[in-house]
Amino acid sequence: MVNFSFRTAPMLTATPLRALMDEQISIIGRFLTPQCPVTVCAQMHSDDGDLWEAFAHYNTNADGTVNLTRDRSVGGSYLGCEPMGLFWGLQPAPGSREGLRLRKKNVETPYVMLMSLLEGHVSPSEKQSTELAAVIAERWYMAPGVRRIEIRKDGVVGTLFLPPGPGPFPAMLDLWGMGGGLMEYRSALFASKGYASFSLAYFGHKDLSGPEKSVNVGDSYFKSAYHLLQDHRQVSADRIGIIGLSFGVYLSLRIAIQAGVKVCQIVYIDSYKITLFLVTSHFLSTINVFSSSHRCCFICHQIEETLRAAGKSQLLTLLSYPGAGHLIEPPYTPNARRAAFLLHHLRW
Image (cartoon, rainbow, N blue to C red; front, top):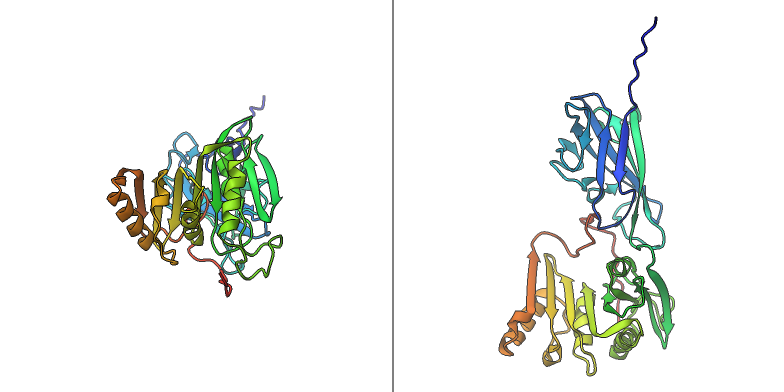
């Protein structure tokens, strides 16, 4: 009689397979040879078709498993126990174009992440590596039921995202920097968390009037955008905030001091060291002296002094992250150290 010995094939699982960009997932390799080197690799393409990848070296446990939530990477794109290291550690693949930054252009489609389990401690570029198992996961900015509405009204150009349900919802006016165009992924994620969010274009968009390489809108444009959001039947009119990045910080301040605008919260993200600046107030109209510069250190000083003089210093929360760079992206997304950014000659 012949005795047959069966061994279960290696397996790689990702739970859940479909998740929002800022949600953690569990990645586990099973049925592997105990105490052996393996590599876990992640690869995905951006909306522009560029390949991004990350990888990490692990040693399997005595039970033949590797669990990224529990185990430590000993090499690759990151070291130590980093459950989401394969996501925030993504970098352009060798040979890619210079200065790439990962930004989602079509929020109605996911990033499709191919994760594979490779034999030995290798890198994805090694063609001789042996794949033991693989799994595909989707990463979304838009949760099921979120509605995306293009706005082209009275000269205002943007995209409104609404959470599932009738509302009314708290809302955010979403302002980006001088990269131009219309970035939607932050607003899509806000709506996935229960906030109505209006991503506003003000420069470098084909539907805006005037030359694309100049800012052709003024205070009335931003005030109209604020009131458009405020007047929406599914928005809670007294619970509207503004989030501004880079030049959007300066614009947020200009909007907040306009007559007839009552902002309940403002978040500023700016400077060469990240400063997350949170103001919760209905008293922003008392701050009436601002420089045309949008450098965050100056803004912080001005608002701190004004709130202190008004006896409202408790309304300010300042979080500083030295060395973090110029922007904060959603959790678990890769943040480029530098990107190809062309600052056009602007007229304001």
